[in-house]
Length: 231
Image: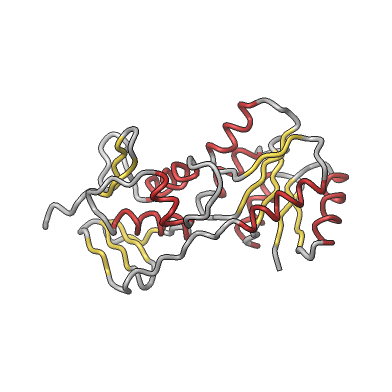
């Protein structure tokens, strides 16, 4: 059963949307503030999060930014403003879609269904071997990554992005190529989602943007994993 988390402090909206989603056979959980919403994303692992921008406590943008550290859930942002800047900020921190209030519950349901039709990230398994670059070790079979001997917790997308880059060290891979490798060739959406997840991946790897140890940005082209200098 598809699990949808609604994070909004307006109870009438929650109740209205809940009814429409449940009629489609979806499980609905809810939160009235950003802090609780973030906890539920971690604890209940929803498939889709419908997230209001204006929330008491932690706002929607910050909830999404933190959630993208550990969750690959589809996220639809809700805002009471039609300003383009809200949409840009939302997409820049990893939102998949956007709706302006007031909205039709039927349209929201349609957006949820459209996201669920998108191909899930392709879970690359590799050959069950280990990619050893000294400081960085990728165990493809166990899907584990260590840096300087310390295990790094990655989401499915982050691991698969790293694996895609590691499969061709030194080769620059553009956004579209990474989308094809990780999300699948049928993915339809903003290609800047690659930048969001790669940014989170690099932070987890302890990257310094000025002198990256592992992943280099080639401006206007894409990203590449540094070749192992020992080879």
